[in-house]
Image (cartoon, rainbow, N blue to C red):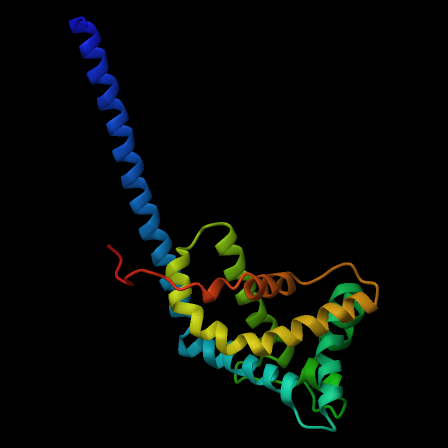
Length: 213
């Protein structure tokens, strides 16, 4: 082997090593960024503002959807489903009908669409929509690989298990209602929540330290 061949081999090895080091450093930086993103989402989720405006009121809506005593239970479930059916195929009518100020309503549907559920002036359907969209956002971030999934599982696992039994009945009833009406459109959160359940994403035990190194 000539000196030139030896020199070329050394150069090739050094180049490959430098590339590997650069890739590793980039991977570590990307991992740190995705962990930080997961922690940021968690801080938002458990913040007093999010609880007061979104998750707290939405949880109460979901509880009523699943376990409200009769005789109002059936009407209440139907009201929530009807609100989403309207957003799929009669949007102009619903904007015209429910765009005004909230007023006390005896009808369950009118009450769900108009009654203020938070001190910030959000109605029941608005808080529920924001909460469902939060889980849909987590689903999207997981599939786009923009968050560190072991960290996400560790942080949100307990909250998913608390909410799963309330979210799934809503998903199944909503999906059936769209099918009965012959509406092909579905809110993204239906598929997202169903995937989080069927994939058992949050049931996979993470093996990590929460410290970002």
